[in-house]
Amino acid sequence: VISCARFDELHLQSIDVPLDGVARAEFDGHLATCRACVDRLRKYVATQESLRELGRAEALETPPPMPEALIARILESRRATRGRAQQSG
Amino acid sequence: MVGSDGRMSDRDQTQRAPADPSDVADDRDLVSRLRTGDDAAYESLVRTQGPRMLAVARRYLPQEADAQDTVQEAFVLVFRSIDRFAGDSRLSTWIHRIVVNCALMRIRARSRRPEESLDEPVLDAVAAGVPGSDGGEGAGLAREEILAHVRACLDRLPDPYRAVLRLRDVEGLELREIATLLNLGLSTVKNRVHRGRHALREMLGSAFDEVSR
Image (cartoon, rainbow over all chains, first blue to last red; front, side, top):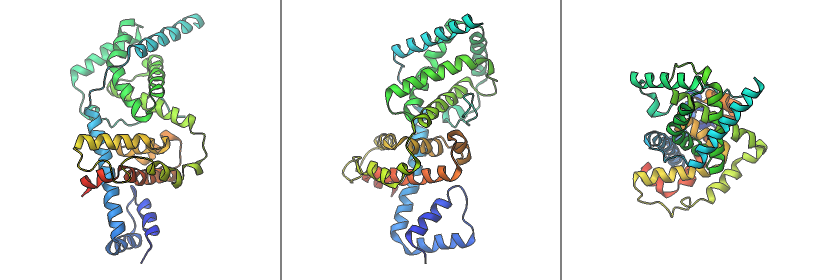
């Protein structure tokens, strides 16, 4: 039987790397007996999924127009950069 | 230091699809005009790509002034590096990488606090101060509202946690890629991802209980 803190350590270890046999057995054994960790894990996974869904939604968003003042600043900085390059070249 | 010319894999859903040949031809035409110093081509690039670049920068840097400065820096890099654009990805994908790299460099440059200050108490304090973590706000929200809530909570995380969660869970990068981009050890990145997810979960509060059932 492992503690909830040990369970969280194993959970951290398992990010992107599968747990080995003993660790996996400890992890699964704790889940079979601890409803609090089952609940935490379920919400943790749902949080990950919500972030993935946010990524999918953001990719489909139409961004608002850029402020004209920023466009002017960018074009001015390009002119300045180009001017300096021509002077030094 | 992170290269500004696109070592990061781009996972933007809109850019993952195979490139349309006509888009590739448009890119080629625009790039050749940019390389000749065509002013109209530069302005066109700023007007067409700028809004998306600013949206990306805002996701990493919620302060508007930071996001705008980052877009300006990114465009300067695009202008300077256009001769190095190899054409093996869409121009928009290449520019996306540059903006993200510029945003990450800004986050790294101002992260002067020692690693200990990014420990659990910081995240706990952030989570405790966010409406929704007390279970009051958000019950019964629609999907769009939940995503807006997720984004708002993500924006309130400290920069180092927000950056790794965006890179890992929103953009889908591998941990090793993130470690390289942020110049951090793999275990530090893993810790931040893990703690960041837990903190975000606390911040999401009851709005999220509805959808995670």
